Length: 457
Image 1 (cartoon, one colour):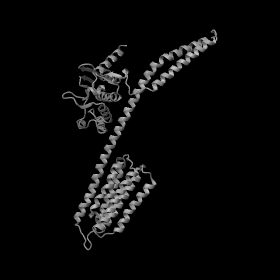
Image 2: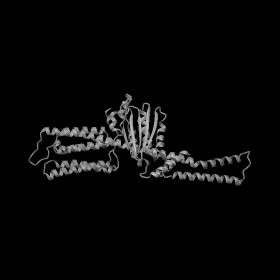
Image 3: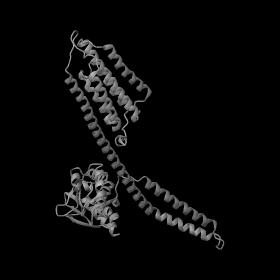
């Protein structure tokens, strides 16, 4: 049970990272030994200390030759190597005064590495090993290196204080570094999920456009091919008059010509440049909202859309990120609404705003300040299972927020003012960012006229 609670997936420590950090530690240990012996002239078992430092160097050389630098250790071997570092440091401290040695604080280094790269379960084991080693060193150790002919004796309370500092520091460092690393990993996972969703939406959009273009372009040659085949079948049947050779060749030539047209059309569609948006890939704000809202109109919740603008309606390119982000917000509003969801659109010469308001319980007070963070929903989902009080949103809201902000939008999220209930989300863009052009009103107007002409066909 305890192992299941602590044994989260590790981050896999690289050989290059471990070897590099150990060489740094070996260099520091070697310098400390040489300065103490030759610089300060203190008496201590220098040869034994050099042997202990050399053992760490031998292990590093063995790792370097056995594994490529890009190899990543599994959780268990990485923990074994870090345990070796703790024991090697413990032996050095035993030879040089135990916890009275100021370098005893280096106990924290292996634990910090474990906290950010291994599972919490392994870090807990290494922390216990550190605590046991520190406890032994309080009582059993050789004298602290000091001036020849003198011996420095520190009071027991000092050793106890150092022990407490090592143990508490190890616990705090392990927990703190582990939490920070876990949050960084979750954020990286969430961003990766965002990129995956955006790529999927982009691919779906491209497939939709390709299918529509193919259906339109291939319609004429395929219809001709169908007529030619039917004509050939009718004229080559048992009860029909035989077709002369010239007519037959003409029909086959026509078939070959139309098949060539299909091949040309497919080649042209395959080489389309996705970055060049044509008129059919532009959409007004109203059409964008309708595309977002359309799939959610049959879920037993009343959906109303209002428009309130000054001047021409904004026109933007078809952006899968915006469509997915708004769609996610609308879907969440429907999930938590009691009876209705209202979507309002506003625009002026300077901004474009979309607001989404539902009549549900709203956001829980304990998550209002953290809305938009990834993995926020676990505790609130348990609460929602027990009651109908509002639950929080998790990764979906984070993805929607990230995609919308990438398009230049600013999101504001909160609850409706009392006595009303429900969540209120406002998405606002500078109009230039929404339309994808900074200062070209005539072109925007021409695009709107083009769209309106196409709608009338």
